[in-house]
Length: 168
Image 1 (cartoon, one colour):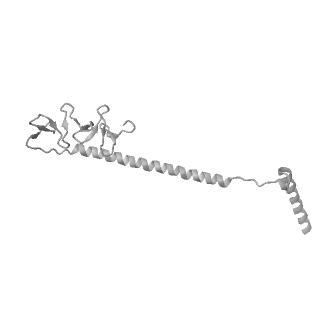
Image 2 (cartoon, rainbow, N blue to C red):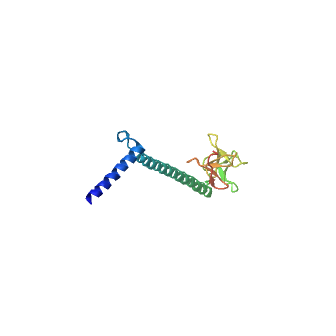
Image 3 (cartoon, helix red, strand yellow):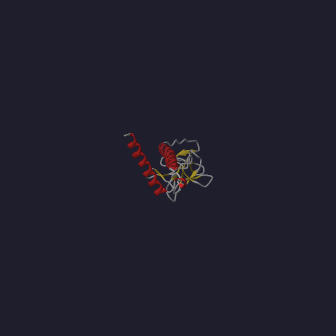
C-alpha cells in the first residue's frame, strides 16, 4: 500500500512539473513573478493620507475664515448700535444727524475721528483719501455700497449682512 501511495505522489509531482515546464519554460529560465502589491498598497495609503491632509487643511482654513468674517459682522453690528457723541462749548450736537456742528465755521464734524463730514452724503474722508462712515469708522465704497472693516479687511454687504468674497 505504501508503495502505491508513493508512486501516485511521484506521478502527481511529475505531471505538475511537466505542466509547469510546458506553461512557463524550463526551471532555469523561470523568474519569480513580481506583483508589486506592496508598492501598490503603500501608494494607496500615501494617497489617502495626503488626501485627508488636504481636506483637513481646507476645513481648518475655511473655519478660520468664517470665524474672522463672523467677528467682523458682530463688530459691524455693535458699532452701528453704539455711537457716543460728546459735546463741547463751541461745538453743539445736531440732534437730527448726531454730528457736532462747529458754530464758528459751520462745518459738521465726526465726534469720534475729528473728520469733517459732508452734509449731503453724511460721509467723511480720512487723511489717506478713504471714504469713512463716521457712525462706525468703517470704510465705505460708494460704487458698490459695501463696508470694509479697517481691522480685519473683511468686506460686508450691509443689506444682506453677508461677507463679500472675490469682488474686493
